[in-house]
Amino acid sequence: MIPEHARIAGEDALNDAIDILKRGGLVAFPTETVYGLGADARNPVAVRRIFAVKQRPANHPLIVHLADVSQLAQWAQAIPDVAWRLAEQFWPGPLAMILPKHPDVPLEVTGGQQTVALRIPDNPLALALLRQFGSGIAAPSANRFNHVSPTQAAHVLSELGDRIELILDGGDCRVGLESTIVDLTGCQPRILRPGHISPEQIADVIGQPVTLSNGIETRAPGTLALHYAPDTPSALCTQSELLQQVAEYLSKKRSVGILSWRDYPQFEGRVRLQKMSDDPVAYGHDLYAALRQLDQQGLDKILVEAVPDDESWLAVNDRLRKATAAISV
Ligand code: AMP
Ligand code: MG
Image (cartoon, rainbow, N blue to C red; front, top):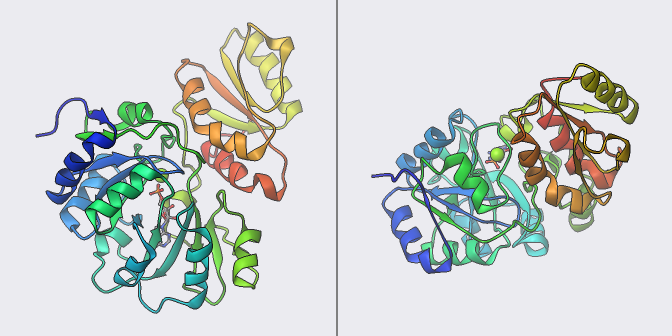
């Protein structure tokens, strides 16, 4: 039976978490990127529950989380040398690798594909859970499909608290943006989703260039046009568009929120400003909590000011574009 509200607990609930996973249930747990919604990756029935709870289409693959690189060969095959080098350099850490799947990996996990996404998360509670479980845990972000990813246990509770039994609370996620995903199954390594680990860092380790996917041909939720989105209509705009839009909204007596790395003292008291850092790492860390804050204000519109268009902002830019994809100013 699933209680109306999930229990939020810490390390003391690890044994309960293992019991739940072993009987095919779901446990939300912290990682350094965002909170995951975990199920036994070898159990197709449990994995199907993830899709039901998230209301996620079944053809969108999940990332399998492991405790140790020694497990890699149980989940992937024909593992190229570059995969071992990337694992050595970046695991545990915010990098997921796409590899040819081992025949035992259920197709439910891979969305019907012959490839699998694997990663070792860098979070003590996640690693303790994975070690004690002793096998792979399939986990997408613990939010409703297409919605803003959770970076605190309370976010998971508000997204899925009526649908799951247990949320392991590891505090605030250190990185706050989803992992970098690198596809190692083609002729050349390809980034499917930018994240904290940059294309240059990957290229440095493998000694060859990596390409950036345009995301169109990949069947992957993080690559859909609209993703990570608040419920309030949100638009990405330049500073001049923002100034013009705010003036327009205020003149029509409509409520508007701003998410920006700049300050707007002239609007104080009249608009809801979510002031962000001008450092891309800090901005990325705070982004989802800030979007949630704005989303709870019942605003008519959220205006997201564009960030610099350079390499260091790649992951943040990707998420901002997806959070606002439905609407332009
Ligand atoms: P989420 O579960 O919301 O964090 O998203 C998981 C991500 O894993 C998706 O955005 C996909 O891009 C990626 N993914 C998982 N498995 C595969 C795969 N076999 N091929 C391509 N992408 C994958
Ligand atoms: Mg997600």
